[in-house]
Image 1 (cartoon, rainbow over the protein chains, first blue to last red):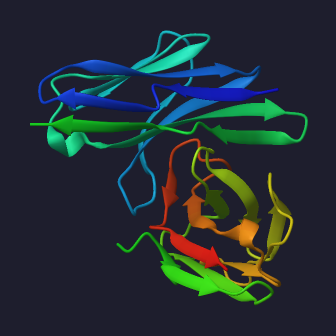
Image 2: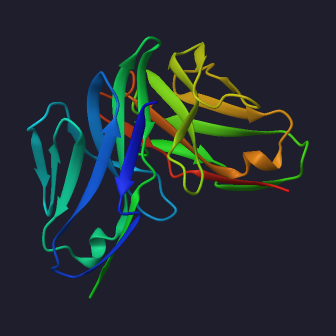
Amino acid sequence: EDQVTQSPEALRLQEGESSSLNCSYTVSGLRGLFWYRQDPGKGPEFLFTLYSAGEEKEKERLKATLTKKESFLHITAPKPEDSATYLCAVRLLTGGGNKLTFGTGTQLKVEL
Amino acid sequence: NAGVTQTPKFRVLKTGQSMTLLCAQDMNHEYMYWYRQDPGMGLRLIHYSVGEGTTAKGEVPDGYNVSRLKKQNFLLGLESAAPSQTSVYFCASSYDLWGANVLTFGAGSRLTVL
């Protein structure tokens, strides 16, 4: 069964304390891995798309990387405004066409 | 730009009542989707549409119906609400199917079924 697992479920960091979030997947026929940010009471907001192992994307304090089995979202010197839930999703090609599967997210809290 | 707008934002229903959630997008996107988000579970696709007048079932379609009479609007209906349909519902749209570029989400509609 195709699965997307995010870890940890929750992460508390001090401001400036860098860390990484993980998204592992057991799917075949990957057609893209997506990272979204979700603030409380709001819909997910697109961050990155990665398509092939070795690919990296950066945006401000965030860097997303992709291997054949997992993706990491690295957060460098986080600030309180980076607090949010980070969702990953994988798009795969199935017999019925494209399918997008979301993970359950990592809830990040950055404290002063 | 408003992006994707969902109404209502909150609703409380009694078991057996019906209601419709409205999603409107102003980006001229061809593709629209309805997801539900529950604690401990990832976003799950209910129904989607690849264009005006077309709809298709997603992962969890039972108990829901949809319509796409106009390109900019995608309606999600509950004919006879059940407590299991208590959830936060998100509408999304994209330029292409499954969003090779971006899925743009609305702010969500929180539904409670008593």
